[in-house]
Structure formats: C-alpha cells, structure tokens
Image 1 (cartoon, rainbow over the protein chains, first blue to last red):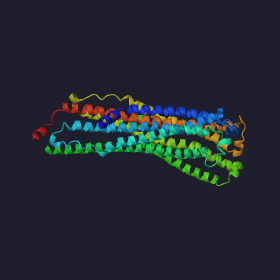
Image 2: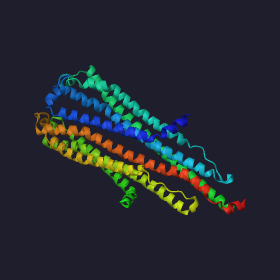
Image 3: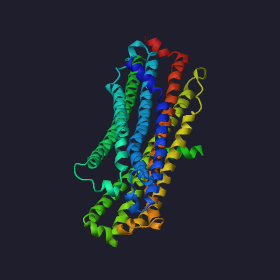
Length: 231
Length: 232
C-alpha cells in the first residue's frame, strides 16, 4: 500500500520539479517587492527614515521590506527542496527501472543459471524517508516564518527614533526584537537541515542505482561463466 | 554544432574542477574580508564613523560582501552544470550502446532506436539559461559593488546626513534595492540548473524504459544457442 503510493508519487517527479520552479519564480517576484521597498525607504534621509511615525507611508515601506524578507527565504527554500525531491524521485525511478529490466531479462535465463532478484536494499527504503524529512523541515520553517511574520510587521511598524531605539529593558518591543533575532537563527537552521536531508536522500538514491548496476554486472558475469561451463 | 556540444559535454570534469576552484577561491576571499572586518571593528565607533581611511576599509568590506556571494554561486553553478553534462554523456552513451547492440543482433530481431527525447534538448536549454542568469547576476553584482564602494568610501556621518535626492542617498538606495533583487536572481539560476538535472535524468529514464521494453523482445526473437541445448 505504502510502496504503491510511493511509486505513484515518484512517477510524478516532473510535476514536483515544475511546482518547485514556480515557487522559486514566485519568491523572485517577492524579492523584487523587497527591492522596490528598500529602494524607496533608503531614498529618504536618515532623519526621515528613523523619524517615520507608525502608520506613515515610509513606516509601511519599512514594514513591507522587513516582513517579506522574513518569510521569502523559507518559501524559496521550499521551492528548491521540491526540485531536489524531484531529482531523488527520478533517481529512484531509474533504480526501479533497472531492477525491472534485470528481472525481465533474467526471467529468460535457464533456471539453473538464474540467481534471482536480491531483496530491495535498505537504502531503497531509506531515501524516500530522508526526502520526506527534508520536506518536513522546510515546511515547518515556512509555517513558523508565516506564523511569526505578524510580529515582524508589528515591530517594524513602530517609529525607529521615538519608539524602537529608546525601548527599555523588559519592554514588549525589546522582548519581541530578542525573540525575532533568535527565531531568525532557527529558521536558517531549519532551512539548512532540510536541504541537508534532501542532499543525503539524493546520495542514498545514487547508491541504490550503483548497487543495482553492480548486482546486474555480477549476475551477468555469473551467467556467462555458467554458460561457458556448459559449452 | 551537435559534435561541438558533445565534445563540450565530455569536458564535464574540467567544468566541475573550475567550479570547485572558484568556490575555494571565494572561501579564501571571504576569510580575508572577515579579517579586514575584524580590523575595522577594532576601532571605536566615533573613529569608525568619521575617519576617511576607515571609511575606505568599510567600502572594501561592503563591496566585497556584495559581489562575493555571486562569485561563489558562479562556482556552484559550474559544478551543477558539470553534473548535468555528465548526465548528458550517460544518456548519449546509453543511446550509442543501444545502436551498437542492435547492429550485432540478426536483422530479424532488430528494433528501431527511438530518436533522442525532447528532454535531452530541454536539459541543455535549462543548463545554459541557469548559467546565464547566474553570470548576469555576477556581472550586475560587480557593478553594484562599484556603487557600494563609492557610497561607503564616505564617512558614515556623511552618509547619515546625506540630503534627499543627493547622489550619495541615491547610491545608498540603489545598493539596498539591488541587494533585494540580486538575491532572487541567484536562486532562480540554481532552480534552472536543477531543472536541467531533472531533464537529464528524464532522458536517461527514457533510454532505460526503451531497453526494458526492447530487450525481452529482442531476446525472444534471437535464434536459440545450439551448444547450450546440446550440453543439456
């Protein structure tokens, strides 16, 4: 049941690759928005930038550039993760096709020369799990980034000179800033752990392909030896 | 043209080697930049913000920080392009192998090798597009780094007191704006290269699926081996 679901999903690797590309292109669009907001914000003098009051146009521009820059990296990495997942799925399909090819050819061999198909290696079961783990970490990162984007908007909506800079110890503003700085580090960790899992999944999928090829080579050599012995 | 592409594809180890060297070089440049930054921040804030010599040090740090990531990504993109080329070589070998096998097989058992799938062409297109996007990003980042150098060569107090519409503030705005969209450029390039790899794998899959379908049919049509049956 689970394996059938996996097989069906793997066949759709092209769809995952395209979805990933669309997500990355959407992230590019949002980064253009960040660029526009940054350009507008920094074209004002430092006094105007820091003195902008809550709700003013300049303050809103600052909110836009900080809020988008908060969640867009996680969104972008989800897109790249989907594409890496598609690569490991394609490798999995290659391994499956090689195995089926071997099975069909060996079915034509005389029974005494047919070594039979070996059990699926553990790595073949491992790489889809690693891939899913990678996606899980990236998705968690994106959910957290979206869930906390409101705090980022709230913080940067305040005036820099009259509210943010004079914020005293224990104040809500300073506590939020502290939380956001810590969370930013965690979001980066989640992104790279997710990518780490996905790259490991690709490596494991490659080892499955290599093992399948090695088995085919060994079986073929044994078959030829057996055939020559008969002659 | 096809021959030229094929001979270029075969040079994938060289492309990966150059890419790796660029990444190593960017790590070295990054380390040097980090030590310059440490040197800069060893001075007290008042000196950092007013001293002209220190401003030039900051200009170097800031401008390197702009172009270096794109240089590193240029190296990474060459490694990814090398992987795509290697997949292209594998797919071509599989097709040639199929042709060689079919030429040995008796005419009655032969099967037609299908033409190269469209994914083979898309693999190259995505790879070239990805390389181009990252190369353009690198060239633009060099130009932005030049602007950043001009802006940050001024003492921080001068930048902070720049009046609205001044060249200094326009430069600062351009640098901050470019940082935003150049970042996206880098990842779009990598995404295109990933699409190249996916299409390379799809090409290999097409070749293997043909083998899976054709080989049993060819084996069925082959005449029986007389010695094997005689031995039994």
